[in-house]
Image (tube, rainbow, N blue to C red):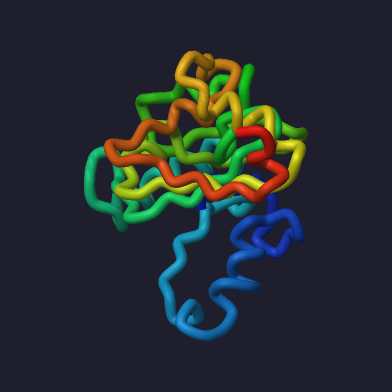
Length: 170
């Protein structure tokens, strides 16, 4: 997971819950190892971020940890994972996970160095509401402060999968 809301594991808004109930519910995914972000079982979101960084250092190789594939979304405000514009999370470089505060909830998020270290990075972008954010993501002159998704700078090319509405006029 690129990020997780600081909610209980069975909360309907939990990303881990969604994955457990879909991708990992049956078929080949059912036997996969899944390392969920520790959340409300810890005292606060900062403790959860530190615990998740520890999990990453234990199960992933590299400094920063290297994922084979990083599948990211793009918010209409230009955020990815929980790197929201106007917050501290996009600027964090000294740890692998941090707290991203946005849209009314604390979230645990991977930092830009971890997202960028992935061997393959893909953005999945859907809907007309994401059109302007996608334009900003593709604009080499766009500020990462305004569009934090621009902080994801892997060594290899980024693959963007966008539907017709999101890509209109591009």
